[in-house]
Image 1: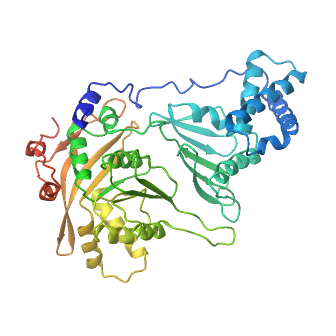
Image 2 (image 1 turned 90 degrees about the vertical axis):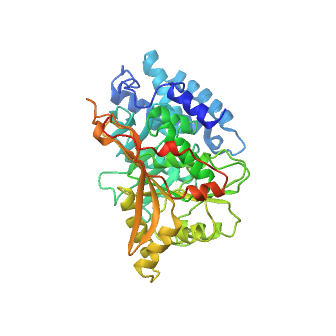
Image 3 (image 1 turned 120 degrees about the horizontal axis):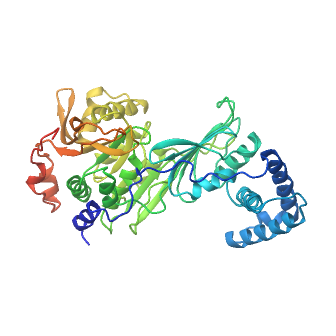
Length: 461
């Protein structure tokens, strides 16, 4: 089925419920029967007995995940059977699940990691957990026993990807096995206890038709962006934190044709590509002696020696911007990246600042010439008050006129349409009536776009 057909299907709503649908924030809360202090004390006792009975088996690398889970649950039932404290069926089931989660998973976070409606988990110390559902924040009843329980969970997460967090290195970026992004910060930087933030990944990568169905992008713009990627334009995706940049980057990357060698470069591997020829690179922090650090900039430079057809950088946030510009200006067309910015114009300013961070003593005009020659398109995305995420600008980078980089908006979000009672935007992306100047470049790649796609659409209608 062609992209147009799939996008048409999405507009008819074949992909289920939008994540912005209303969800009851209390749907996952457990009913409490026994006094909480009694259950907490019993949980510690049973947990200690279980660890003592299993011993080294918990760390036996020869056991598969399923075999270890079977042993833990079997031993857990035996330990609970010997426990004389009276428990209701609900409390016994809850206790068994919480202890299994502690040993096999990430403790009180497990219910929210399993909940497909939760998109982000925020732990503000051991006794306060918030989750994001449909773009809105809700407090939940889950909690850690104490600070040390939370720190053990953080250590378990970061150790799996060869990283650490302690007083000497109190901040860390990591990921879960499914690719979910993890950030942890501990005392002394975090004053009220360790803080953990997990941005969950969807079990299945979103596709273009999903973004159409969610209202993030229109069918016409999705078709346009698909053509731009296939036509090897250099694209920068910009936006604020939580605006959906990585999701859009994943969708744009999915348009890269099969048969091309793609190299992805990230701090924590998040990009989900299904093409056959993909090489994934991940940066590395310094070790305890302060050595061994491998930065995004190092990886970008190394990627140039790996015969890439496409370079996809998860996020440019520092001096790596200079090497990214060099790559784009030395024949590596079709590169895609993201950065934090408030608008397409701010994106240009941010990249200028990041290039200056590289310490290269270049005049500002030379930097702007590099930027104007490197980027073809800026796709800007925002998160609205109701939690929904929308592409608001699709902007062409035309070139340098004097000392100013000239931009031209091809599609803009219609803010004039207003907002609904819940803060939901009533507008959508609309064509400004301006035709992009890179149509000839696309034509050289054998890609031709209907000019009607760029016909002016009235705003505020």
